[in-house]
Image 1 (cartoon, rainbow, N blue to C red):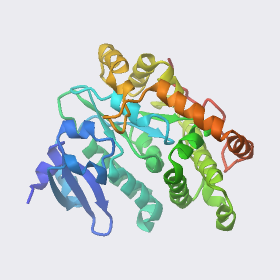
Image 2 (cartoon, one colour):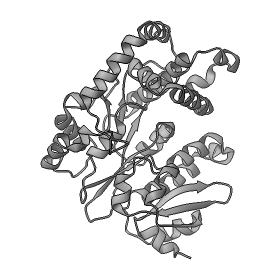
Image 3 (cartoon, one colour):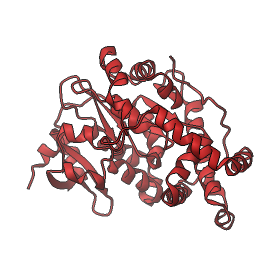
Length: 347
């Protein structure tokens, strides 16, 4: 059995799951190279896992209290299909910043916040749980290294907790047509994904949750996708508008990243307080990261190829995109949202 103190102290022990019924955290052992390499730190990371262990929340909390605290992590929250994995990869710089992409445990926490009545009744308990997990994720692999976390988009409900804990946060997004094109590009898999997102967000109690289920059943696949996109955009707009003036928070239209990689990486690094040198960021912008598929590194893929694919899809689906665009223009789920979103990232 692995010692709980080792689980708390060694950053190679990644907290991978939260078992609410048992009050247990499960850990997977992955070295830094594996953490940086994996595009999804969930069941798809299996090839990088070398061991597993678990311990009670209370035991982990006590052990963590005996370790030196790390700086709070930075976060990139996103609406999906907006180059968030690319951005996180480009900001991974050994010794300066480790990017953790879509840790499953954050989805577990977000879902616990949606369905666990005890946590819903006790926001302070939820905040303590989030801070414990965030502190585990923030453990550096080298002195002075910071941790950047990109949760899955269905975990964006954690943004308020992250801001309350003092983490710098970036809200990355794209426009509706970009979102719809990405759904269409994935075919039936994309349409199913949009409906899965809808069902998850319906548990949030706000936004699209107000739509009667019978009405939602009548939506087309693209209408579902449009509502999902609007739900996320309104959530971001509310958080950005409500944040106090001194909060370390910014928004970014992902097209800025593709149009000016080096300039945008430097701006994001400054906003998130990441100790990455300009030279390292310039090298990332000019290197293989922007010439390959961020999720499947063995595939070549760049902005030109993305643009060509999107152009073909726009031409094929022009009529449907126009219809949904007009329909979605009337959507209002409870909050105003104008573009660009508030607190746009400074150049």
